[in-house]
Length: 436
Image 1 (cartoon, rainbow, N blue to C red):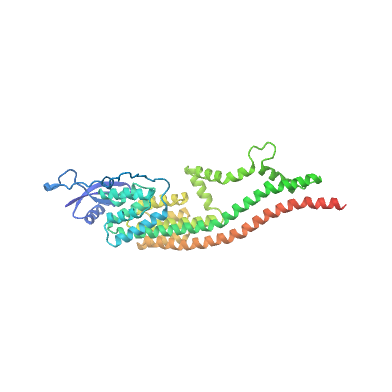
Image 2 (cartoon, rainbow, N blue to C red):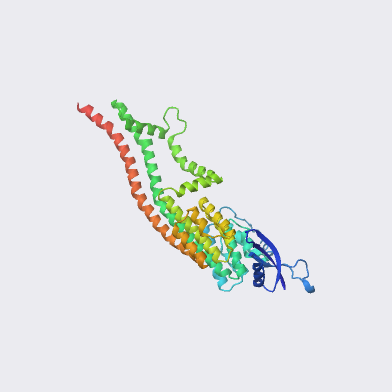
């Protein structure tokens, strides 16, 4: 019999730790589940000291990789840990590791191969640390959990579930699929926003240039002819003076305010979201914006259903899966709804009812989840909802683009028309005065 250490969750979602004697890891998992616990980590207990039971001679501990590989004379070892790890790199690493594991290569050898392929940088250093930890006897999930900036809780928990079930290659494949779909969805939304943002920036630059350079020239002409200026023209001249910073008592030129405004607004938004009230209020308001709110809601539903479905299908206990999904949902409204779902399931009630009461999803989503609960195929239903909403996001993005293009044309046309009209009205008065 072998002694296994385990970490688990009880029916109330509280973490539990202990040891069991079993003939295999599968037997240990069965024993833990028979106690009413949901195992999250099961590993063989290592014997400390030089001798194991029965007087067997202990194996000599291997030196870490960093100690084995001595520096060459004159070699400079620079560790680059600046900047975040790109999701694209992590997704590619996950796909490659899944392929190597499916081919039957040992885990340590697979990690070493992938580490050597990386370019110098933060991610290569992280993989080096993981290789050293695995080589020293740690599990892959524990090693990854030490680097949350690269491998978040969702990632490490799914890997842990794969280790327990002995299907690490399948779990990595699901993780890669999940991350690729999430990145595609994010890329679609970002790509849709590029066109209107570029158009708005160019329009602001042109209008600011007209205000700064062109309008003062016309003002000089109007002053020379001593023409009485209409109110619209006076407003345009005052706006030009504000942009140029020539208004009486003005300390900061308007063009500097225009340039700094996006950065100030972004910083203010980030500062507000540091507080719970700020996150709650901004997320609530954003979801109720016309057109944009509908797109964000569909994106959030697709994200949380795919995350939860992937975790449940990987074998992660449902209470822990909901907690992880709540932490990674990215929206306070959905976090609160999933918190209510967690409490409902912990008390032995259903998944669908608190979600229906929260009114954050369409009735179709709630009904599909309800059917999934009844049939025992909750993960399958969640993935179907995610796929369906991914398609709806595509349609919503196209609809948003179709709406933005004519809206931008109307707004820009109105701005240019107002400037032309304001400059043309005094010219009419000048022509009339000359013709008399």
